[in-house]
Length: 140
Image 1 (tube, rainbow, N blue to C red):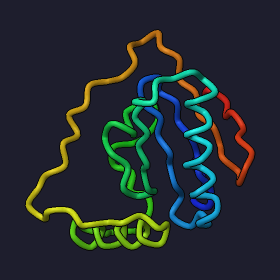
Image 2 (cartoon, rainbow, N blue to C red):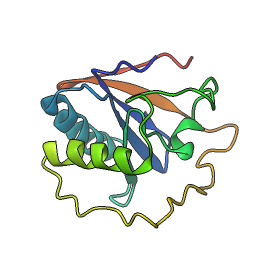
Image 3 (cartoon, helix red, strand yellow):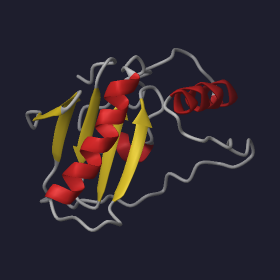
Image 4 (cartoon, rainbow, N blue to C red):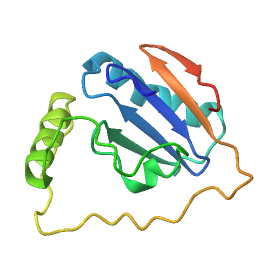
């Protein structure tokens, strides 16, 4: 349901994710980051609220766990990219966005053992970012 030319905000309370479609325009990517900052301020969240950016095809387990229907076997994004090739593509995307990327140690595993941020009764909201406008998406 996430369109590859769009960016979305996923509000998980203590953490906000910015999901970036692999063909989203640079302007939209920048607008999504600004929208996340503005959202945190508008919700009176602490400045320490974690904001994570997730690029299509490289979603973490922590991000995928927020979706009931995310299939563990689903391959999204850039096809059959493997670790090192995928890191290069992510680095290129970040560089295109103006992020100073120093690289990732090839032998350094990614720590995805992040505890769930919401218990069963928490509030979960997903927002679609369209340049300067943000629109809430239906719960389903």
